[in-house]
Length: 424
Image 1 (cartoon, rainbow, N blue to C red):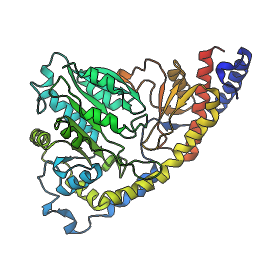
Image 2 (image 1 turned 90 degrees about the vertical axis):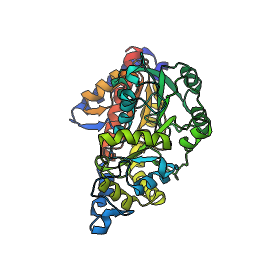
Image 3 (image 1 turned 60 degrees about the horizontal axis):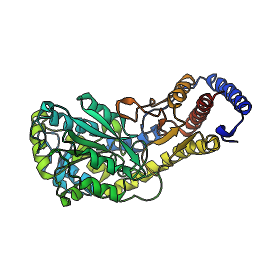
Image 4 (image 1 turned 90 degrees about the horizontal axis):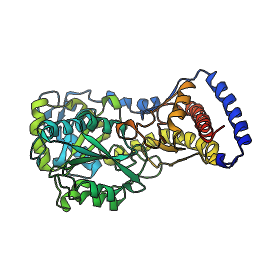
């Protein structure tokens, strides 16, 4: 197949006519396929549903002498804190163990900063004339929506092969109105980038003008390899402390894609001073999160080594799904030279950059053919991709045979949109 840009106008018209016929045939199948969100598939959920067979004896409800069925322990069970600390390579006394949603803890952190201020805030952020927030993009739409919902001004920071453009970050934090940055440091959403050690050290050593500048370090995919062994990762909390910024970072994680998204546990990890401050504020809001579920996860996951073994089982289910999509892209789209994409080594997404000006059209065609995907622009602040190019693909939910159909639809629509842009 020839690259589309090198085809003659007549060749492009013939190619488009063949694709249009294939598109009509695909539409006639009446497909209802979904690659919009990074949800674990049924096989993964079934794999871990034996977690509910635990806690059959009265002693199972006691952890470190604490009856988990009762009130208390706002910051979470000590055993749950130890489990997360081992996974994140930090200290148990730096961990707050919560409910099933790390996003809730992220929202709460921003909300508390807005209404009360953080440990080093001069005033609550609601009393600031303006609050600005750094958003590495392509990035996670739900992160951007949190800070947008509080009226913050979102500033796009370009992503590189090593993480956020740190020259841009270091320049931006000279503005005292810049209060923080979103980060997904390992297998970033959606790019699949692992921040380099140099990037992480520069992040930890930032000298922001705002004394309460906060790194929101969403380590959602910290143990989520798709192939190969676990990749160790630097502890941002220790690095911030070494750089003289002990209170600058809040790290988040959860078991949403380890056990069950609808019934997992989550945490944030931060300095002990931050933890004491936040626990005091949260103790007014909650007496405790679900400690029974925290205990269930402690008994089920046991420790980091046992958890990593479980993650290999997840990878065995996920890897063929990613290959199904990537192989189709490599075969159907690569020769046309109309898009580029990464082959991620972990995480839950494939990030594709289509020909500028074609992402929205591609996804509109996909929808018409029965394939639902994350909206164009969602990976940028305010949902506005200036190039109309980036598309996030989530292969985790459908079975492989459905993914192959969905990938075929997607490639057909992508090529049609590219030919339309080139002029057919």
